[in-house]
Length: 549
Image 1 (cartoon, helix red, strand yellow):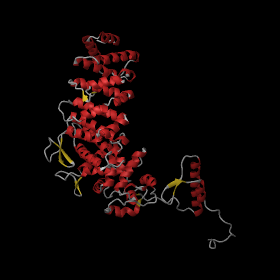
Image 2 (image 1 turned 135 degrees about the vertical axis):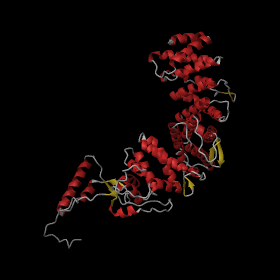
Image 3 (image 1 turned 60 degrees about the vertical axis):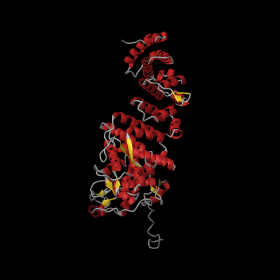
Image 4 (image 1 turned 90 degrees about the vertical axis):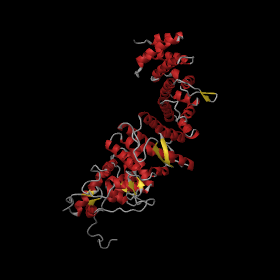
């Protein structure tokens, strides 16, 4: 039976708990899946919201509290009718029912977990949809209350739903408010707090200083699949940690912070090597893990290589490369998908680049996988299905950030050697990065890289004299277009080309460039074009060529 809003309002005005409960339960059932609202009933919805909030201030049975909160959750989906729910009083009422309000220094206990969950859902809605609600929550110390309850992450009194929506509300606050991020990160020691929560959620034990394993995992076997609930909470924690560490890799950290980040890094390594129930859920878990790893201070990434080599591990130079190999496979999977490349690919590509830059073993392992010794010199570097071919194709991608990151990754694998970089990518593909770094004339700056061999295959050595450095392959023999031309004809064709460039330049269609002595690209001016013109022929009775200087 469809409930008229005015009828429900009249029943709420009577103050009778049973009548209000029946009316609200009928409305909630009817509107449970409603996310679009009739604008003509906006006033009535706001009036109903005020009455329901007033009802919550009374001593109600849990069933009536739950019905009132369900109604608020439904009404708070409408951004245009949030007025009653974004005041300080409303946020305080919802916080009290969520068990997050403080009373004389102690958290008010609400025994009914369903009421807590519903109140948390309401807070999530209003905080997401209203800056006023976010401000009220900040003034009421909502972040501090959430942090206090996060400390109880190992307590059995809280259900999965309570823990999950605590985390969801924390994520929303840190995503939407800078002051909330700062408060959680610094004042409330959020990294350590959330690392502890992550440890508890995953059920870990520490087998070494920076190495973890699942409590329920047998030694030498892969960890069991993560359950749905554990996976959901883990991903929320990873998202919050990402919010509060977004600037960490751009600043120096002290020894205590570095130890905390290494501790977290060890847990993230476990997340990366774990699987959830379902391929999509596993990929989401790994995606959030990679995003967060990219925020960690670079020196702390050494924890990814710390675990000892075990049976079944991928070993390279005596180092366990399981994590690096997993990151590479994850990057390739995103590369093959080709959708939302910037959002999905760059976090893993940047992480691999920086790891290779500071860890010799990682760089050499990745180079072996991505840039093996050249054998195919018949095809362009961008043609093919190998990782190198796919990444070289990205070097001419339309998005500047994407092509820069792909080029930077390969450049680092080449130890930032221009000649080696051109060898694997071709000068045409490499030109963008080389121009940006002022390396168009060649050279390198590999002082922070170790010495290692770049042995050429027999196929490459034989073909090297015939490889076109621009395209990066052996080209078919082409006829010389100037064959049979006199010197005057060649000069005439050259001047035609100069005039065409000049016309395009004057029309601002192109900007001709020149290479300076220091390898930088600068604009080619009109005076430079004049210098390209050949000198006028002198009369035959002038000074001979032999006498000229």
